[in-house]
Image (tube, rainbow over all chains, first blue to last red; front, side, top):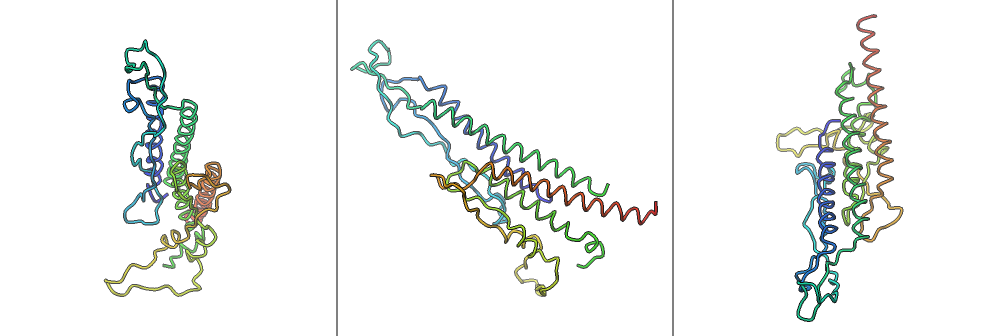
Length: 137
Length: 134
């Protein structure tokens, strides 16, 4: 296999999926966090992926993945009436995070599968490269 | 570049190169399986093999001056054959990658690559047998 580009591509995919797993972990950990105001409440975070040209001099080479940034969910933070909570506002309400746990779990499985796909691609390419090195022996 | 060795190995070096190129494209598809608006691509294997020119039916162009824009290398002919996939089911985020299909294609491509390698290896081995006479 003449080019090592494939390792960059699969590697970028793995790092992007790791970022996604990281945000999922953060979201799940903070699913039950509460806050006194709706703006300060924890908002679910999700990464934004973009395909970028992996080699500058080869416009038609494969696209690797870039994490453009982490977007915060715009969903409304649900208010709960908990006057006993020390974080409650003057009316007795606390604002919970807007994390959807079911969605996060599904997202986590999807990220893990995508990561595994990239690992498999890398493994196969490595095997093929090693086979090419042994050519003619 | 009609080295006797090139003719001896036949179409397999070209096929090997094309398989390597295709594996790169498929890897990019798999890496971008979750990227919004990413359009899956694939190499048109048949057209690329035809264009990579194992037949000399068309006269090749030659760069005679230093300032000439480089002509298509044999490898470039392969990249020109990239086509977008027609998705089986469209998704809302505009992504057209079907991970299962890409996986299957990647596996198939890996086997093809290994097949080409085996053919070239066998050719070399018989050449060695002819040289050493054993």
